[in-house]
Image 1 (tube, rainbow, N blue to C red):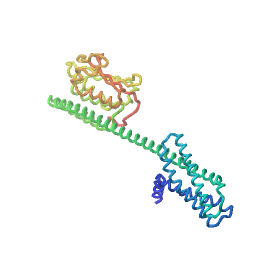
Image 2: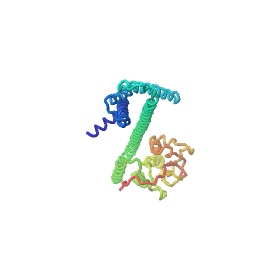
Image 3: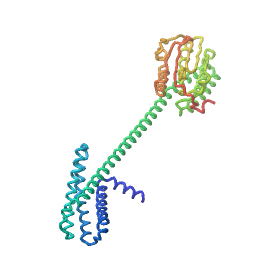
Image 4: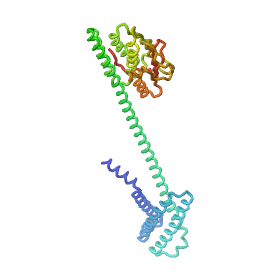
Amino acid sequence: MLGTKNTTYYRFIRDDGALFWLLQATGWIGISLLTYLSLSVPYDQYEWSYLAHNISQSLLGFLLSIPLRYIYRAVWHWSIYPRLAVVLGVAIVFALTWSALRLFLFMMMTGETGLWSDFGGWLFPSLFVFFTWAALYHGIKYYQFVEREHELAVRAESAQRQEALRRANAEAEAREAQMQLLRYQLNPHFLFNTLNSVSSLVTAGRANDANTMLLNLSTFLRFTLESERMTETSLREELSAVELYTAIEKIRFSDRLDVKLEIEPGTLECAVPSLLLQPIVENAIKHAIAESEHGGTVQITASHAEDALQILIDDTGPGSTASGEGDQTTNARTKGVGIGLQNTAERLRTLYGEAGTVRSLASPLGGMRVEILVPADLRLVSEGGLS
C-alpha cells in the first residue's frame, strides 16, 4: 500500500501540469498568510475588510501569474539575452498591474483614500513577488530539464549495455555452436577410419589386435564425450589423448609407426583447444606413414616462443609436398585430407583471433611440418581427462 502511494506521488510530481498548479496554489496561499502575519497582526487589522482584501489580492495574483507560465514557456528556447529581457519585462508589467489592482481594491474595500501617492511602496513588494515567481519557474524548469536529460542518458547507457550484453551472449552462443560443429566434424572422421581399420584387422584374422583397438577406441571416445563441455584443455590432457589415438594406430601399423614426443616441461599446463592435435597426427599417419613401405616417424614438439605456445608436428615422408613458403597454409596433402587443417585453422581463429595460427612447412625430417601457435595461457582447464 505504501509503495502504491509513493508511486502515485512520484507520478504526480513528474507531471508538469500537476506540479505547476500545486506550486502555484501553495505559493499564493503562502503570500496571503505572510501578508496577514506581517501586516494585519502587527497593525491590529482584524476587520473583515482587511482579511477580504488579503484573500482577494492573493487570488488576483494567482490569476495574473497564470499567463506567465505560457509566456515563459514560449521563450524558453530563445538565446539568453532576448529571453532575459522578456522575462524581466513581463515580470515588471505584471507587478505594476498587480500593484495597481490591489491598491485599488484596498481603497475600495477598506474605505481609505488618497493612497496613490504611496504606489511605490506597493510596487516594491510586487516586483519582489513576481521576480521570485519568475526565478522559481525557471529554476524548477531547468532542474526538470537536467533530470530528464540525465534520465535519458541513463536509459541510453542502460540500453547500450543491454544491447552489448545481448550481442556478447549471441556471439558466445554462436561461437560455442561453431566450435561444437567443428568438433562433430572431427570425431566421425576419426571414428570411420578406426572402424575401417578394425574391420581390416578382423578380416586379416588379427582378432586380439582388433579387440585391443576397440577397447582403446572406447576409452578415446569416452574422453571426447567428457571433454564435450570444454572448448579447451591442458596440453598434458591433449597429449594423453594423442597417445591413446596413436596406440590405436600402432596396432594397425605395427612397428612401421614410431611416435616421438619432445615436450618442454613448462608447457604441459598451457591451454589448447581440445582434440587439436589428433586430426593433424591422423593426417601425418595417413599421408606419410601409410604411404611409405617402411613406415616412418611422427614427432610432436612443444615449447615456448616468446608469449606463445609453439607446437610442431613433423613426419618423415614419404616426401615433402609442402611448398616450403612460410605463409603457405594449404598444399596437396591438406587438400587430400580436406577437413583436418582447415578445421584446425577455423577453430584457432574462432578461439584466439589473430593470436592463433596454423601453417604447413617442409619438415627437417623429410616430410611435412605443421606449426601451431596459440597464446601461452598457463591455466589448467580440465581437472578430468584420461584415466
